[in-house]
Length: 464
Image (cartoon, rainbow, N blue to C red; front, side, top):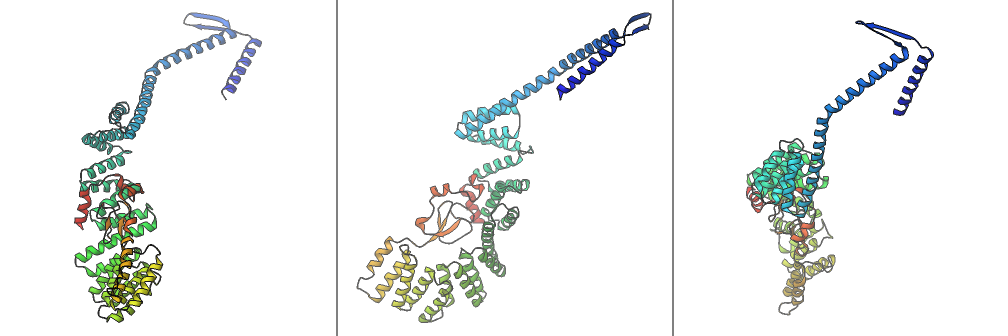
């Protein structure tokens, strides 16, 4: 495009020069006593030279005027490049754990770039690596005034509050972070973790609903966590004396937690307390169809406790019919048959339980078989073989945390060891995750990136 413009200009000049040469003329100029007598060509040439001189002069003046601004821009660009280089080197030093280099590069980045979010973040993390929490807190607080850095500042301050054991301060900051970025998964997980650990179940319920609305976690996981919260709310309502509300919440929790027997057991006991035994039986049968559990069997035995021993066998057969293929169904009938001294019936159902889990039957099955042999053939030593098998068999499945590997006798929404929310699963203790294995698992909540001291977890337990 530029070449075309030059060619057009040259063509116009050539045409103008040809016209002047073809039609020469004289020009007479009189001004203030001065008289100029020349030709048209000379006048045109003189005018062109004057215009060129003016243009050159103005160009020199403009270039001189632009020198200070250009110098400042070049200086700023150079400082920016050096500052970005300091940021890069500081991040590398942080990753390598080089405290001195990280602090040096962070200071250099702050001098070159000023109080920019990245420079402040690097300085804060370098100060933390160096053990200077006060300097880190100053940088994180300064980030709160930056539009693009407020969220990073809140995250850093939350981490400091948790390390200091100030759960209330961390919770307040997490609420601000959630309000600032309602669609941020980290803010949602952090706030939910802190609210559950503090026993603020109603607030956790609202937070979970908002997170599910923004699709910050899979629908199935959201429903499971909602069931865990409802179970804890049911326990709280029972403690407050609101049995009707407790029963309603327990029913909802049992529906949302099909893999956990605790809500169903809690609901059935509340129904028994209201003398609604038929409804309690239906609740136990419904739960048995989903997840057979020894606690449900014991509760079923309490519901039929007034029956004679022989009739209790039929009573447990009714329960087992809800899930006939489960080993727990066979064990429940075997225990009732053992109590009724029906040795053959007990042996038959225990054999079924062992066949349902070949090579993996729990210790309880072998101990029950030993009781059958010792009761039917006392003093003959026939129980010894089953006692020996029991010693080598895996223990009864228990609830274990998939995060820390800690075991719990009963299921609760929070792990009593690490305070993690909704991480207990029923499994054989020998298969439970060890702390080392749990460290390799993906975090249930990104809040785990910020260490939570034991004091906060215990505070959450006491709050409940």
